[in-house]
Structures are given as C-alpha cells and as structure tokens.
Image 1 (spheres, rainbow, N blue to C red):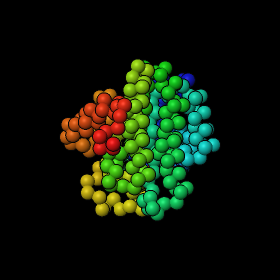
Image 2 (image 1 turned 90 degrees about the horizontal axis):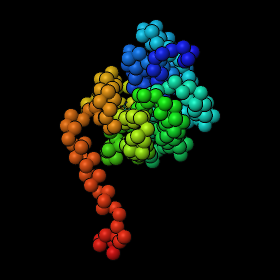
Image 3 (image 1 turned 60 degrees about the horizontal axis):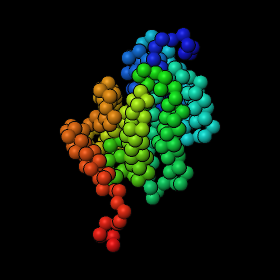
Image 4 (image 1 turned 45 degrees about the horizontal axis):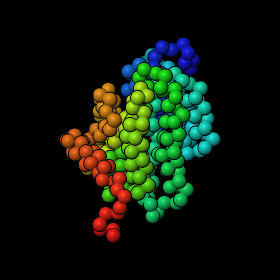
Length: 263
Ligand SMILES: NC(=O)c1ccc[n+]([C@@H]2O[C@H](COP(=O)([O-])OP(=O)(O)OC[C@H]3O[C@@H](n4cnc5c(N)ncnc54)[C@H](OP(=O)(O)O)[C@@H]3O)[C@@H](O)[C@H]2O)c1
C-alpha cells in the first residue's frame, strides 16, 4: 500500500481479525479510512483487507504481529514510526484468562498483561508524536465495563481493563492541549469469539450485545468526542455520579496526617 499517494485518513486497528476489531475495520472503511489491520492470523487479515478494499474503495493492508512477543511488537512500533500518516489508532486487541486467577499459569497471566496493558501503552506512546501532526489525531482504547466491576470476572483481566480506563482518562488530561483526542470504550458482554476462546458460554450471560451495535454506538461516542463511552449504560447520570464522587475524593487526599481511624 502506498500511503503517500492516498488522501484518505489512515487508521491502524489491533485485533482486527475478528470481533470488535474487525467490525471497527468495516465501519472505518465505510467512513473512508485506509486501514492497517493487525493481529496474529494473517490469513483472516488478508481476507478482510481484500474485502474492505474492494467494497469501500479504500486501501487496506494486513500486518501480522503477536503483540505479546517483544520482537513482533517492536516491528509494529517501527511500522508506526515509519507511517506518520496514521491519524487514528484503535487499541482493541485483548484476551481473557480461561480459568480465572487461581487456575492460570503465570505465563498466561503475564501474556494477558503484555497484550491488554503493555502493548496498548507502548503503541499509544509510539503513535503519539505522529498523531499530534494531524488535525483529527485520535486513539480509541477498548476497555470493558469490568473496569468498574471487580466483583464479576477474573482479577487480571478486570485489572487490565481498569488500567485502560484510567490510562485513557489520564492521557486526555495530560494531553488536553495536544490536539489528540482519546476515547476509552467500555463494552459489556458482546457477541464475539472471545467467549469461546476463553472457555466461557455466552448463552449463560444475560444481556449480550451484537458486535455491530456495540461498535456503531461506540462511534457515536467518538463523533461526540466523549472520553468515556459505555454503550450498554442506559442512564448516563449513574456514570456521571460515580465520576463526580471519585473527583470529590481528590482534595481529601492531600493531608499531612493520617485519618483518625488509623491513629
Ligand atoms: N466481547 C466482549 O464481550 C467484550 C467485552 C468487553 C471488552 N471486550 C474487549 O474487546 C476487545 C476485542 O475483543 P473481542 O470481543 O472482539 O474478541 P475476539 O473476537 O477474540 O478478538 C480479539 C482480537 O485480538 C487479537 N489478538 C488476540 N491475541 C493477540 C495477540 N497476542 N497479538 C495480536 N493480536 C491478538 C485476535 O486476533 P488473532 O487471534 O488473529 O491474533 C482478535 O483479532 C478486547 O480488548 C476485549 O477485552 C470484549
């Protein structure tokens, strides 16, 4: 793909071979984005790139990478550095632990953190300087409602998504004057392959959203320049109340002495 000859915006999507990432690829192609699609399954990526290119008159290319592998991640980072035309980064690739914490091997735990946390933070940093050169530079990070619900799922996945939420909120504040827009999306249960891969039955979950509805709603939040988008949350005021309660704690933290209950 020759980026220099295209006048279209260019988006890079991780985890684009299936599910939410593949649906973002479809929707962004329909919006006229050229695409770089990243995942491990090169065959699926090539098929999707060919389909989206022919259907939407955009240029789409596959980039095969295992984001838990340092060498593979470094090659993607170099691609990003070499491609300042990228104006949108969608950090979507993610995984769950099949067995929860107590049944998971340390390498599986480490792999989840490398994918869900480390690669997302590294790619955000590597892409940032290029994104700043665009009028509409943006990063979309895919978290989960589990970031707000440690009671529901396994500790490592839940905490990884809490990282994505806090990371994005903090980025939006630190880089408010950069011209780059940061959005974090918190899906709840969405019908994708992630459930079967994690050995979980989606049929057992009440209230599963179709992936197209999830991504279309997330893109409404994107168009509205929301920082935090929670597609299934019907009453937005509940999120605003939580966020305001959290912010009200901040002035309480700066104290020279411990609270009386600790003395
Ligand atoms: N579905 C839900 O209910 C739900 C809810 C909340 C949040 N989310 C989040 O949404 C995001 C997308 O998940 P999904 O539901 O669309 O699941 P999915 O269908 O399993 O898609 C995951 C994507 O990540 C890629 N991926 C997995 N491991 C990778 C690795 N080591 N290196 C590079 N790419 C890798 C997969 O492709 P390859 O296998 O080809 O590498 C695939 O494209 C994840 O961050 C997930 O945590 C999902």
